[in-house]
Length: 261
Picture 1: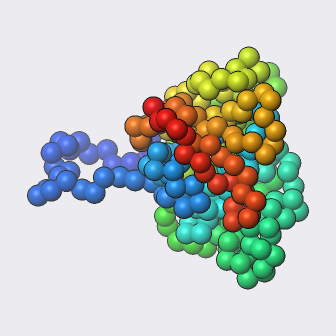
Picture 2 (picture 1 turned 120 degrees about the vertical axis):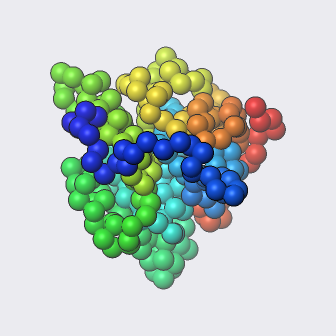
């Protein structure tokens, strides 16, 4: 229905592009900076549009999405949908480590950060966040795409409908970060066709990243971040490596890749 109904809130008046510029050009658009991951932030021009994070199991997709959400939550509301079932207690414990066991630091980190275990409350959650924190941008993290409720008979069509819904929300100051599983046939490769279960990801994603790691690498070895689509930036390819932050300032810290395409 969202795709076919007229958006009555949209400005339908026709205006020449020349009328949008007066004596000088406006400041170039940019997204929300990711302070804990400055290399990624610069390569992507910040959080904007629809982000999709993919990769093989166990490489840290959910951890990366959670870190980005918690980082953004310092200034804007963030709703994290734990559909994979990590559990409130485990997510709380992760933030406790980042906060250094300080209740004061924990509350400061999470005063705009909300955890939900069902997507059924999405519309109400967005309304509540705007009521509590005022008009402006909201980040939602969906972990993961493949666990969204869909029809068994028409699963692909249902998943594509969800992706299109998130695309529409991105036009209304909502920034979706979607965690996606990887196709088994694409293990070990970074490419658009590697995202599992939906061809619409290729079209809906503003920023699509995939995490890779050599087969022989252990959990302590770097995880490669490959940008396979970057609508709001020029950088693509292997842009950086993520390593576990032993000081627990955040879960991941960056090591810039030797070569950037």
